[in-house]
Length: 247
Image (tube, rainbow, N blue to C red; front, side):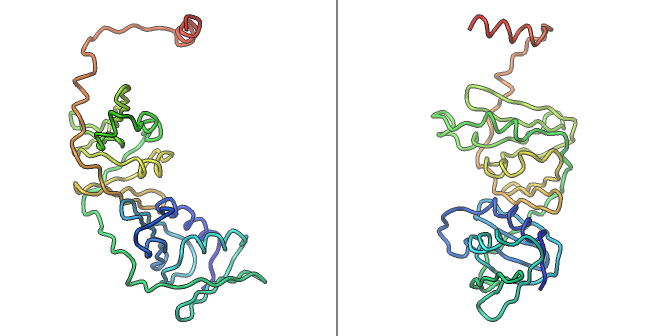
């Protein structure tokens, strides 16, 4: 099979779901199923599509990534029994092949997808901190997707600071996306998301991220937001300058 940089880029993208150390040896491998690369750590799974000739194989993540660092253009992959050969010009390397049937079975999320746009997951992540308060409440170590009056609110907290982004997106399910999955989509401003109550699936640009959800109920954060309707309009630069001087 002849592949190109699309395969390399897809593998690099999918490797965001890989752990440095795994309890199961098969998790050190990635699955190629047609034109899709799958990597999982059991909590987060990434499926990334690539352009090129489709094939089926289960290959070691770290070894293949290290070898492909030396490949700049097209390359060939040939599989013979329990070994796969990568060849680009005069450079080639071999890696062991695992049986594709031994790869972890990934359960699909069977739920309706909702288009989410103009969101700031990366901004919300800034307020998720591992403090003594949040350590005892794992549900706070992520970003909450919470419907309010039928519309989506993006919420996170460090225990001391609360972040809320209100949107005009129709939403009817409440769940907390763990911080690792949030880190993968932190720079993605538009995606589709679905949840079955145990897992969430996020799709964008030929990528699918499947993540287990944080267990527990996110606190009633509305109760700590002041209900005072008074509003004071100030010049941001003047306020910032004044705070800096008195501090």
